[in-house]
Length: 123
Image (cartoon, rainbow, N blue to C red):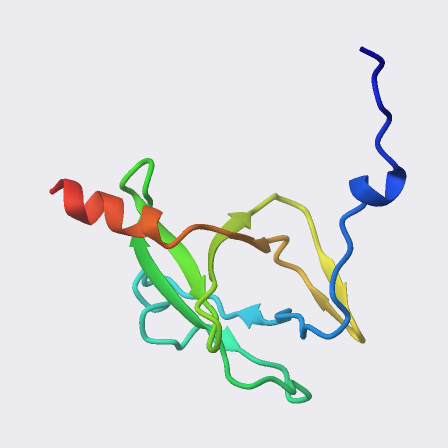
């Protein structure tokens, strides 16, 4: 039986231009207390933010390790994202006209909300 090649159109994932994207740009304030994220004090939303609400940052147990981890909950559609922090020495970021001497980078990745309940159900 001969193999049939798939057309490139079937391999390309396209997004719907009708959908609005949930993209946030925010800064996290420095905080020594690991529970300051629960209080919402760490989130700084830029003045020009034109969203329907601000996301909530909550500290919960990580589903795999059980250690404290930060998670971002979107305000409208219930999307949950894990916030990963990469910290390197001797790194800086240029943000508009200023220099942020702390080289931390916060990256959020989507996570299925059911995984957040697993550590609590095991105990």
